[in-house]
Image (cartoon, rainbow, N blue to C red; front, side, top):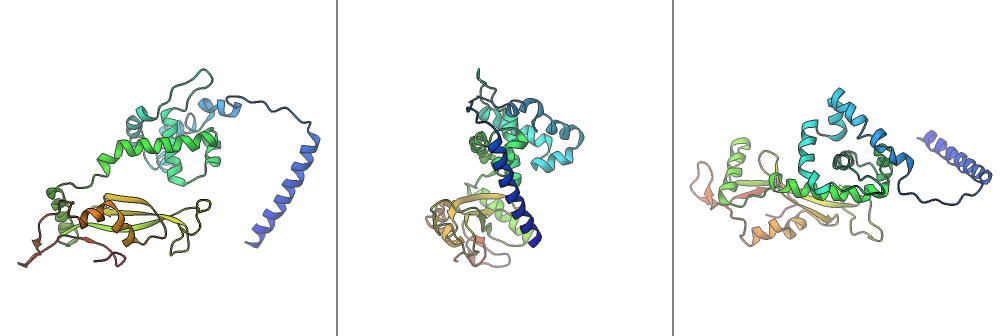
Length: 275
Protein backbone atom coordinates (compact mmCIF):
# COMPACT_ATOMS: atom_id res chain seq x y z
CA UNK A 1 0.00 0.00 0.00
CA UNK A 2 2.81 2.40 0.95
CA UNK A 3 4.63 1.63 -2.32
CA UNK A 4 1.46 2.39 -4.33
CA UNK A 5 1.08 5.77 -2.64
CA UNK A 6 4.76 6.60 -3.15
CA UNK A 7 4.68 5.67 -6.84
CA UNK A 8 1.46 7.64 -7.39
CA UNK A 9 3.04 10.71 -5.78
CA UNK A 10 6.17 10.44 -7.92
CA UNK A 11 4.15 9.96 -11.12
CA UNK A 12 2.04 13.00 -10.30
CA UNK A 13 5.14 15.15 -9.92
CA UNK A 14 6.58 13.71 -13.14
CA UNK A 15 3.42 14.44 -15.12
CA UNK A 16 3.11 17.98 -13.81
CA UNK A 17 6.71 18.81 -14.64
CA UNK A 18 6.55 17.18 -18.08
CA UNK A 19 3.31 18.92 -19.01
CA UNK A 20 4.71 22.30 -17.99
CA UNK A 21 7.75 21.80 -20.23
CA UNK A 22 5.68 20.69 -23.22
CA UNK A 23 3.27 23.59 -22.80
CA UNK A 24 6.13 26.09 -22.81
CA UNK A 25 7.57 24.65 -26.04
CA UNK A 26 4.32 24.61 -27.99
CA UNK A 27 3.14 27.80 -29.72
CA UNK A 28 -0.31 28.97 -28.79
CA UNK A 29 -3.05 28.01 -31.22
CA UNK A 30 -6.43 29.50 -31.79
CA UNK A 31 -9.25 27.30 -30.54
CA UNK A 32 -11.24 25.73 -33.35
CA UNK A 33 -14.78 24.54 -32.77
CA UNK A 34 -16.01 21.50 -34.70
CA UNK A 35 -19.29 19.66 -34.63
CA UNK A 36 -17.69 16.21 -34.31
CA UNK A 37 -14.11 15.40 -33.38
CA UNK A 38 -12.21 12.91 -35.51
CA UNK A 39 -11.97 10.18 -32.87
CA UNK A 40 -15.72 10.45 -32.27
CA UNK A 41 -16.52 10.47 -35.99
CA UNK A 42 -14.86 7.06 -36.33
CA UNK A 43 -17.38 5.57 -33.89
CA UNK A 44 -19.35 3.82 -36.63
CA UNK A 45 -16.20 1.99 -37.82
CA UNK A 46 -14.03 1.62 -34.71
CA UNK A 47 -16.37 2.03 -31.73
CA UNK A 48 -17.19 -0.85 -29.40
CA UNK A 49 -20.75 -1.24 -30.65
CA UNK A 50 -19.73 -1.35 -34.30
CA UNK A 51 -16.71 -3.62 -33.93
CA UNK A 52 -16.02 -5.54 -30.72
CA UNK A 53 -19.66 -6.07 -29.81
CA UNK A 54 -20.28 -7.65 -33.23
CA UNK A 55 -17.31 -9.96 -32.72
CA UNK A 56 -18.41 -10.99 -29.24
CA UNK A 57 -21.93 -11.67 -30.47
CA UNK A 58 -20.73 -14.20 -33.07
CA UNK A 59 -17.55 -15.58 -31.49
CA UNK A 60 -17.84 -15.27 -27.69
CA UNK A 61 -21.50 -15.20 -26.57
CA UNK A 62 -20.52 -15.77 -22.93
CA UNK A 63 -18.27 -12.71 -22.94
CA UNK A 64 -21.08 -10.77 -24.62
CA UNK A 65 -23.40 -11.74 -21.78
CA UNK A 66 -20.76 -10.87 -19.20
CA UNK A 67 -20.27 -7.44 -20.72
CA UNK A 68 -23.94 -6.42 -20.88
CA UNK A 69 -25.37 -8.88 -18.30
CA UNK A 70 -27.78 -10.24 -20.91
CA UNK A 71 -27.46 -12.46 -23.97
CA UNK A 72 -28.01 -11.52 -27.61
CA UNK A 73 -31.67 -12.55 -27.75
CA UNK A 74 -32.51 -10.60 -24.59
CA UNK A 75 -30.69 -7.54 -25.91
CA UNK A 76 -32.45 -7.71 -29.28
CA UNK A 77 -35.86 -8.10 -27.63
CA UNK A 78 -35.27 -5.16 -25.29
CA UNK A 79 -33.95 -3.08 -28.21
CA UNK A 80 -37.12 -3.74 -30.21
CA UNK A 81 -39.17 -2.37 -27.30
CA UNK A 82 -37.17 0.76 -26.53
CA UNK A 83 -35.98 1.71 -30.04
CA UNK A 84 -39.12 3.73 -30.95
CA UNK A 85 -38.63 5.80 -27.80
CA UNK A 86 -34.89 6.49 -28.03
CA UNK A 87 -34.00 6.60 -31.74
CA UNK A 88 -33.10 10.11 -32.87
CA UNK A 89 -32.87 11.54 -36.36
CA UNK A 90 -29.61 12.32 -38.14
CA UNK A 91 -28.82 15.92 -39.04
CA UNK A 92 -26.77 17.56 -41.77
CA UNK A 93 -24.01 18.17 -39.22
CA UNK A 94 -23.66 14.68 -37.73
CA UNK A 95 -25.19 11.24 -37.40
CA UNK A 96 -27.17 10.52 -34.28
CA UNK A 97 -26.36 7.78 -31.78
CA UNK A 98 -28.27 4.67 -32.82
CA UNK A 99 -30.81 3.06 -30.53
CA UNK A 100 -28.57 -0.01 -30.18
CA UNK A 101 -25.57 2.08 -29.17
CA UNK A 102 -27.59 3.99 -26.60
CA UNK A 103 -28.99 0.80 -25.09
CA UNK A 104 -25.60 -0.97 -24.98
CA UNK A 105 -24.05 2.12 -23.38
CA UNK A 106 -26.76 2.24 -20.71
CA UNK A 107 -26.59 -1.47 -19.93
CA UNK A 108 -22.82 -1.27 -19.52
CA UNK A 109 -23.26 1.68 -17.18
CA UNK A 110 -25.81 -0.24 -15.09
CA UNK A 111 -23.63 -3.36 -15.04
CA UNK A 112 -20.44 -1.66 -13.86
CA UNK A 113 -21.16 1.85 -12.60
CA UNK A 114 -18.32 3.18 -14.75
CA UNK A 115 -18.14 6.96 -14.90
CA UNK A 116 -19.01 8.80 -18.09
CA UNK A 117 -15.42 9.81 -18.84
CA UNK A 118 -14.38 6.15 -18.84
CA UNK A 119 -17.28 5.07 -21.03
CA UNK A 120 -16.59 7.76 -23.62
CA UNK A 121 -13.32 6.08 -24.67
CA UNK A 122 -14.97 2.68 -25.03
CA UNK A 123 -17.99 3.82 -27.03
CA UNK A 124 -16.42 6.91 -28.68
CA UNK A 125 -19.26 9.06 -27.39
CA UNK A 126 -18.38 12.30 -25.55
CA UNK A 127 -19.11 12.32 -21.83
CA UNK A 128 -21.44 15.30 -22.21
CA UNK A 129 -23.55 13.32 -24.69
CA UNK A 130 -23.51 10.26 -22.43
CA UNK A 131 -24.87 12.35 -19.56
CA UNK A 132 -28.05 13.02 -21.55
CA UNK A 133 -28.29 9.68 -23.39
CA UNK A 134 -28.31 7.37 -20.36
CA UNK A 135 -31.18 9.11 -18.49
CA UNK A 136 -33.21 9.14 -21.72
CA UNK A 137 -32.70 5.40 -22.25
CA UNK A 138 -33.43 4.63 -18.60
CA UNK A 139 -36.78 6.42 -18.86
CA UNK A 140 -37.61 4.39 -21.97
CA UNK A 141 -36.70 1.07 -20.33
CA UNK A 142 -38.87 1.88 -17.34
CA UNK A 143 -41.75 2.90 -19.57
CA UNK A 144 -41.79 -0.27 -21.68
CA UNK A 145 -41.12 -2.82 -18.91
CA UNK A 146 -42.76 -1.53 -15.74
CA UNK A 147 -46.29 -2.76 -16.46
CA UNK A 148 -45.14 -6.28 -17.28
CA UNK A 149 -42.34 -6.87 -14.79
CA UNK A 150 -43.30 -4.70 -11.80
CA UNK A 151 -47.03 -5.17 -11.57
CA UNK A 152 -48.43 -4.85 -8.04
CA UNK A 153 -51.43 -7.14 -7.38
CA UNK A 154 -54.70 -5.22 -7.63
CA UNK A 155 -57.26 -7.91 -6.77
CA UNK A 156 -57.93 -10.29 -3.92
CA UNK A 157 -57.40 -13.21 -6.30
CA UNK A 158 -53.91 -12.01 -7.19
CA UNK A 159 -52.93 -11.60 -3.55
CA UNK A 160 -54.43 -15.02 -2.75
CA UNK A 161 -52.19 -16.52 -5.42
CA UNK A 162 -49.12 -14.98 -3.76
CA UNK A 163 -50.25 -16.26 -0.35
CA UNK A 164 -50.70 -19.76 -1.76
CA UNK A 165 -47.14 -19.68 -3.13
CA UNK A 166 -45.75 -18.63 0.25
CA UNK A 167 -47.63 -21.48 1.90
CA UNK A 168 -46.57 -24.12 -0.64
CA UNK A 169 -42.95 -23.05 -1.14
CA UNK A 170 -42.02 -21.69 2.29
CA UNK A 171 -44.72 -23.17 4.56
CA UNK A 172 -45.67 -19.65 5.68
CA UNK A 173 -49.46 -19.21 5.45
CA UNK A 174 -51.40 -15.96 5.05
CA UNK A 175 -48.35 -14.08 3.72
CA UNK A 176 -48.75 -11.59 0.86
CA UNK A 177 -45.11 -10.51 0.52
CA UNK A 178 -41.64 -10.11 2.00
CA UNK A 179 -40.44 -6.55 2.56
CA UNK A 180 -37.01 -5.05 3.22
CA UNK A 181 -34.91 -2.00 2.44
CA UNK A 182 -31.58 -1.59 0.65
CA UNK A 183 -29.20 1.37 1.02
CA UNK A 184 -27.81 2.28 -2.41
CA UNK A 185 -24.47 3.93 -1.66
CA UNK A 186 -23.70 7.14 -3.54
CA UNK A 187 -21.58 10.29 -3.43
CA UNK A 188 -23.38 12.93 -1.41
CA UNK A 189 -24.87 15.71 -3.58
CA UNK A 190 -23.30 19.17 -3.18
CA UNK A 191 -24.48 21.12 -0.12
CA UNK A 192 -26.62 18.21 1.09
CA UNK A 193 -25.05 18.08 4.54
CA UNK A 194 -26.05 14.94 6.42
CA UNK A 195 -29.43 14.43 4.70
CA UNK A 196 -28.23 11.28 2.90
CA UNK A 197 -25.95 10.06 5.71
CA UNK A 198 -27.10 6.69 7.07
CA UNK A 199 -26.43 4.59 10.16
CA UNK A 200 -23.83 2.54 8.25
CA UNK A 201 -21.63 5.61 7.88
CA UNK A 202 -22.17 6.15 4.15
CA UNK A 203 -24.35 8.38 1.99
CA UNK A 204 -27.22 6.61 0.25
CA UNK A 205 -30.74 6.57 -1.09
CA UNK A 206 -33.10 3.81 -0.02
CA UNK A 207 -34.71 1.18 -2.22
CA UNK A 208 -37.55 -0.55 -0.40
CA UNK A 209 -38.98 -3.60 -2.13
CA UNK A 210 -41.74 -6.14 -1.59
CA UNK A 211 -41.20 -9.56 -3.18
CA UNK A 212 -43.43 -12.56 -3.72
CA UNK A 213 -42.57 -16.17 -2.85
CA UNK A 214 -40.53 -16.53 -6.06
CA UNK A 215 -38.24 -13.56 -5.31
CA UNK A 216 -40.03 -11.37 -7.86
CA UNK A 217 -40.54 -7.76 -6.86
CA UNK A 218 -44.18 -6.72 -6.84
CA UNK A 219 -43.62 -3.22 -5.45
CA UNK A 220 -40.73 -0.79 -4.98
CA UNK A 221 -40.24 2.65 -3.48
CA UNK A 222 -36.93 4.33 -4.29
CA UNK A 223 -35.47 7.77 -3.59
CA UNK A 224 -35.82 8.38 0.15
CA UNK A 225 -32.65 9.77 1.66
CA UNK A 226 -30.42 7.53 3.73
CA UNK A 227 -31.38 9.07 7.08
CA UNK A 228 -34.76 7.34 6.95
CA UNK A 229 -35.24 3.98 8.65
CA UNK A 230 -36.83 1.10 6.76
CA UNK A 231 -39.95 1.48 8.85
CA UNK A 232 -40.06 5.21 8.13
CA UNK A 233 -39.88 4.57 4.39
CA UNK A 234 -42.64 1.96 4.60
CA UNK A 235 -44.95 4.28 6.52
CA UNK A 236 -44.54 7.03 3.90
CA UNK A 237 -44.74 4.94 0.73
CA UNK A 238 -47.98 4.42 -1.19
CA UNK A 239 -48.13 0.75 -0.17
CA UNK A 240 -47.94 1.54 3.55
CA UNK A 241 -50.49 4.29 3.24
CA UNK A 242 -52.79 2.01 1.24
CA UNK A 243 -52.46 -0.65 3.92
CA UNK A 244 -53.41 1.84 6.64
CA UNK A 245 -56.39 3.08 4.62
CA UNK A 246 -57.55 -0.42 3.59
CA UNK A 247 -57.10 0.29 -0.14
CA UNK A 248 -55.07 -2.79 -1.08
CA UNK A 249 -57.88 -5.29 -1.74
CA UNK A 250 -56.51 -7.71 0.85
CA UNK A 251 -58.23 -11.11 1.08
CA UNK A 252 -60.59 -11.56 4.05
CA UNK A 253 -59.14 -13.03 7.25
CA UNK A 254 -58.45 -16.72 6.90
CA UNK A 255 -57.76 -19.41 9.55
CA UNK A 256 -54.26 -20.85 9.75
CA UNK A 257 -53.87 -24.53 8.83
CA UNK A 258 -55.38 -26.71 11.55
CA UNK A 259 -56.99 -23.74 13.31
CA UNK A 260 -60.47 -22.22 13.27
CA UNK A 261 -59.86 -18.62 14.36
CA UNK A 262 -59.53 -16.31 11.29
CA UNK A 263 -56.32 -14.24 11.23
CA UNK A 264 -55.29 -11.42 8.87
CA UNK A 265 -52.84 -11.66 5.99
CA UNK A 266 -49.37 -10.27 6.74
CA UNK A 267 -46.07 -9.15 5.29
CA UNK A 268 -42.94 -10.88 6.55
CA UNK A 269 -40.11 -8.50 7.56
CA UNK A 270 -37.36 -7.94 10.09
CA UNK A 271 -37.67 -5.93 13.31
CA UNK A 272 -37.02 -2.62 11.51
CA UNK A 273 -40.72 -2.65 10.60
CA UNK A 274 -43.35 -2.12 13.28
CA UNK A 275 -46.04 -4.77 13.79
